[in-house]
Image 1: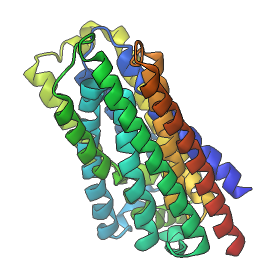
Image 2 (image 1 turned 180 degrees about the vertical axis):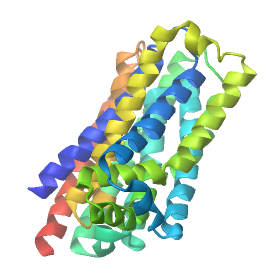
Image 3 (image 1 turned 30 degrees about the vertical axis):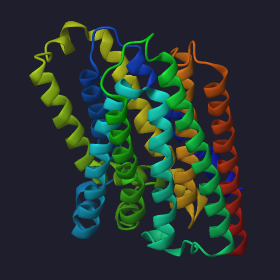
Image 4 (image 1 turned 60 degrees about the vertical axis):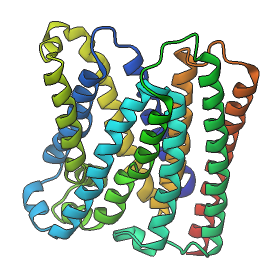
Length: 346
């Protein structure tokens, strides 16, 4: 039962995160720098800290008892994620939401799933099975299937680019965008590693002072993602200054609803991901991340299709995309099965 509930939670987290890009497509006056600044400020800055301070008694005292190494480790991973998020946002513009989500998700998946099984995380995740265990082998099979799906999605993206090269305007060189998204994919594991390797002492400190499990998990994101949100705010602030577009934030306040919605979706996603990982058990940092990534990619593809990115694309690339999506769903099921095996053997 825990496997089903946990899998559903991280699946919803992935869909929430992946579909958040629709708000970027809805903008008319704002640029993506406005979208990034407002969304990150709300979703990773204000909301997690608001929940932590409101629902975790003695939050500051609890954090002061957490080893400094755990906080630094989390924020180093978060800094990498901050860079990845900036690159990802740029790639949405350069090569499209669908292809960006596919490549970034696949690369982030392979590292995010395997590393916590090689180098055990904190708290509950310290008991994760090894890669060579029966459960680990099933999870690796899921990773292989998912990477095959990402390859198909990437090939579909190249086909789409060739088909639309002369009929749609581009924003930058495609090859440059591809390199950027590969780097972003490697660094995008930051949230998973920040949570896996720091949640144990932070959650314990909050629970000892009377906080509930959900609020304690929010505290992990609030303090552990601080480095990442600062990178995003600094970059978007630089663009707002360079483009002299700060005033647009208040001149067109109705546009702010879209990045605000993205921020809420982001916050909901990380809350579901953290709690879902814990519900999944010792293998949650790996399996939870894998299922989350699969559904995030699916959300990205939905945004791409619904926004017209694939309009006029021939049947060949479309079939590759559909096949890739099917493999992603199969991979998520395999990982959930691997988690159930780990639970049954524990």
